[in-house]
Image 1 (cartoon, rainbow, N blue to C red):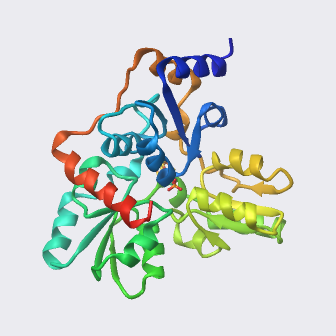
Image 2: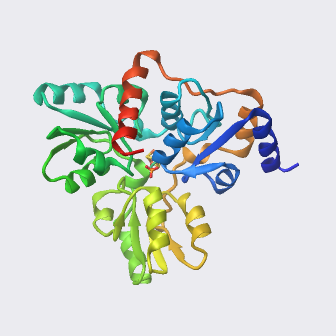
Image 3: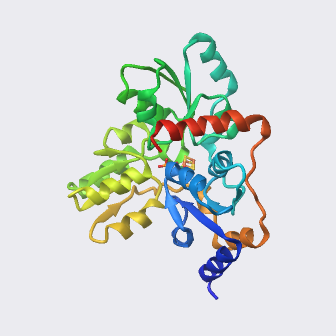
Length: 302
Ligand code: 13P
Ligand code: SF4
C-alpha cells in the first residue's frame, strides 16, 4: 500500500478530514480533502461534520481551528511548524496604543498566536482585511502584527488612521525586487501577482495583490498566459493544475516557508494512528481570541 493509500484508509477508519494550506508540499496537498488559504480553511474546519481534523499548516492555524471548534480534535502533523510572524508584537505596544486612542480597534492578522489574538478586537486574513477594516466603526486602527499587510490595508482605507507595528513574514519580506524586475525583463508580457505580505518594493511592481486564493482566482480569470508569482512556491502546484496552458515564474531565490514544508506524509499517518499532537489553546486566552475570530467570520459575510 502506498503512503497516500494508507492515509485514505486511516482517514476513513477514524472519520477524519485533512485540511492543507497552499504552502505545504505538493504530496501533502494531494493527500488533503480541502486545500485553501487561511480564511477558507478556518471556515471549513468549523463547518465540517468530522470530529477529527488533520490540519496541515503551521501552529496558529491549528489554534484557530480549535478556537472556532473547541469540541473538535485538531491534529497537527508537525507540531513544531510555527510561523515566526505570529509572535512579532508585544503586549506593551498594544497597551500603549489603547491608552493613546480610547476609540482604538486592534485588528489582528490570523497569523498570530492565540495570546496575541486575545489582545485584539477582531481578526482578519489577507482575504478579508480590507473589507473588515473598512466596515469597522472605529477611525483609529492598530493593525498587528504584519506591517506589509497593514500598509496595504491602510492604502485602501485612507479615511482611517491605521497604525502599524514591525511584524513581517521573513519569506515575503525577503523577496527581492531586483529578481522580480529581472523576470519582467525576460517575460515582458507576464503579469506580476503578489501576496500583501510582500515588502513594499515588490508590491509596487504588482499587477494584482491578493491572498493565495485571490492569486489563484486572478490567474484563472486573466487573459494573460504568463505570470510572475510573488508568494510562497507551494501555490505553484495548484496554479499549474488549474491552468495547464499557462506559465508561472518565481524569483531566482525561491520563496520557501520551511515551517510549512516540515509536514510529511509519514507524520500525517502517525497522527491519524496515534491521535498525537492535538492543538490546544491556553484557557486564559480562548474566549477573547475566539471572539475575534468569530467576529471576523461575521464581518466577512462568511
Ligand atoms: P493566506 O493567503 O492564506 O492568507 O496566506 C498567507 C500565509 O502566509 C499563510 O501562512
Ligand atoms: Fe508565516 Fe510567512 Fe510561513 Fe506564512 S509563509 S506561515 S506568514 S513564515
